[in-house]
Amino acid sequence: MRFIERLYFGERAKRKSGRLIKRIRKGSRLTGAYVICLSEGSTDPMEFYSARLLSQDYYKTHEPTILGIAADEDEAVEVVSSIIKDCIETTGSLDVRSFTRHLAGVSADGAAGE
Image (tube, rainbow, N blue to C red; front, side, top):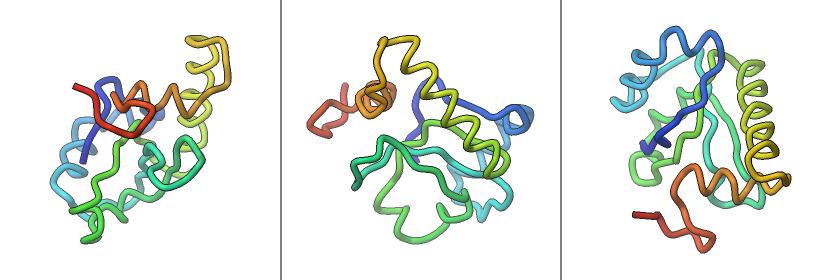
């Protein structure tokens, strides 16, 4: 899995952030946590889903770029809201797709930055 340098966390997920990151990297079947990821095949800037999906074989060859971690679905919505708020405050616009790609070090054409 690829993680951005400054991960976003929900309040409850932040308390166990080290353990969650370690288990996600290991590919453990993690229940009760959600990941917020850069959207790869969509016009949406980001998406979130249960972290337990990351244990599937697909994600071993198609590693998502993780922007944030939340303890549950409601908290994932809060983390997404926080990312959008930071986008507006930082860029003065609502170009969330460019902002999240910048956070992840991905250029506009989809190539990973150095």
